[in-house]
Image (cartoon, rainbow, N blue to C red; front, side, top):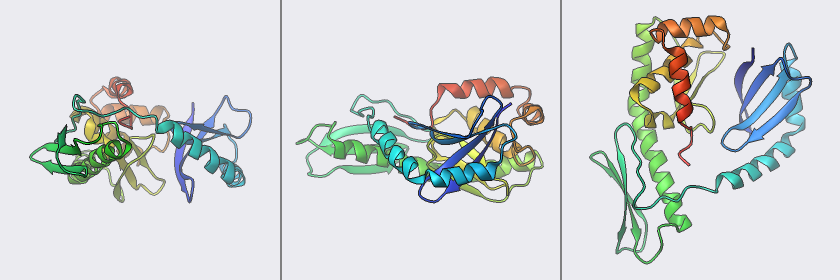
Length: 241
């Protein structure tokens, strides 16, 4: 059984620490859109692993830059792109002005780009992604904290704080001090799966790993459908591109 926890290291960002029965030595894994994972043999010294991270800091930073280059090979948004969050849809269209413009109003994120340039222009694409993520951030801040509190009260669970972030590889996390981070991209999921992720993180308030007790508790909270909901999450990615 693998055990995981998330730590935040300055300059390196969020690091997933995974204890694995299969691992024979400490190692570092980096994958596009999955960030950095520190793998430690089961029962190994986590502090030794963290020291190893700091020793490899420059190597990690260099390779994270390479990962970012791979991540930049993005989907091209255009007038035919279909994008829908919980409360807004995306519309892209040309306009006669010289700059890209964004407007979020009445459930519609409109991106207007100059007729003089192609929609695939990097500036246009960057602005579209910026508009989507900032709109998701606003939406998430309006909805997720209140929904988390409602679910926590329903299941008699007390957490510390909730923060909305643009997480690279996780839908959410719960720290050792019961602070919960939620990914703004949750707003692209169906309501049932949003609730599943929130319940998953609330469950970590009492169960800090993904062992049998965690799944038993979560299954009760999810009315016996925890595994089915977890499988359904595989159809979605934390990044939109």
